[in-house]
Amino acid sequence: MRALHWHRETASYADYADDEQTMTTFSIETRNLSRIFKLDRAARKESGRILTALDDLNLQIHPGELFGLLGPNGAGKTTSIRILCTLLLPTEGEAFIEGMDVVKDVWKVRRIINMVSGGETCGYGILNARENLRLFTELYGIPWRVAKPRIEYMLKVVGLEKFCGVRVNKLSTGLRQRLNFARGFTTDPKVLFLDEPTVGLDVHSARQIRSFIKEWVVDHPEKTILLTTHHMVEADELCDRVAIIDRGKVQVCDTPAALKKLVQKETALDLTIKGLDPLPDSLDELPGVQSLTTNRETDRQVTLVHALLTDPEAGGELIRVMTGNGRRLMGLETSQPTLEDVFVKLTGRSLVDNNVDAAERDK
Image 1 (spheres, one colour):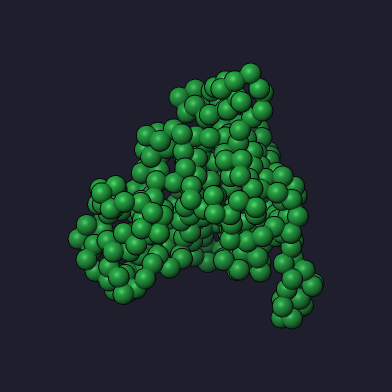
Image 2: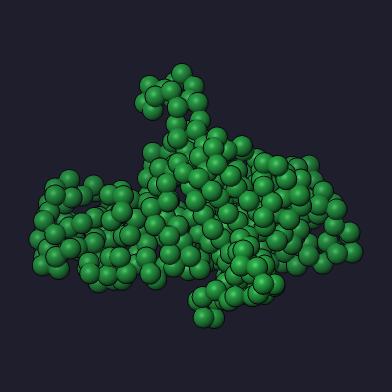
């Protein structure tokens, strides 16, 4: 059997021939995977009787790869993770972990996987942080002599050494999420699912988590990670390949660098506007402006605007309209197109989408 492993130094797949056969072993594979939800009476008014969360999803992820599913809330990312983790049955199609069917081989699959989901309950509130991690290693049948150094190491990684004796129900939201992240690694899974792992973390903690993930995949080249996120920077920084998913369908799949080439002919501008007032609606109708995304920073009292222009000359008119009514331009610089620019070009919508559908609420 021939297995393909991701080789990060060359950003390519290394080919290891185990015998003369030519079958490829995938760490994660989905074949025409679909999931349909029946909606309750209240939800039917907007979406009808059913909601298609996944629509003919096909993925092939190789051993050793850090693969990302990038999309807005409601795109189908969490539904995909739940099916792959044997927590949700597909309506149609098949899914495999290390060649094992997630429906037929549930218990075999569960032995080699783990999942970290942002915002979920990290354990039992009456137990302290260390006790919770020990409990989960025991559920996996890991001997204490093996589990103990892993637990102590992960407590140090997430900065919980001083809080290891504190009951989980006394920890802050951010500390509980750090503990939740540590739990995913203490079992040393062969395949790890990270579903929005930095949700609820401050900027510094999220940066530390991303740094650890990068180090972990280098130290464990035989392990596979599937990361879901709607943060373009997270996907760009961590992932070997990214599949952009929207409304349950994969729009495109490639390396972050290759995806950004899809918008390399456009010009990206980053502007900083004084104040938090809404910008004119007419900005979206300006000729040469393909997309606009905004982010209001309340602590600095500024509005950050990222614009993708099909015509560089459109920048002058954009600034003129944006600074009308006394708005002050505090900063302007060109930037490289982002994965969000790719998403906007493919779907016409922003990754920052507040319209969460029923499937994504069903976490």
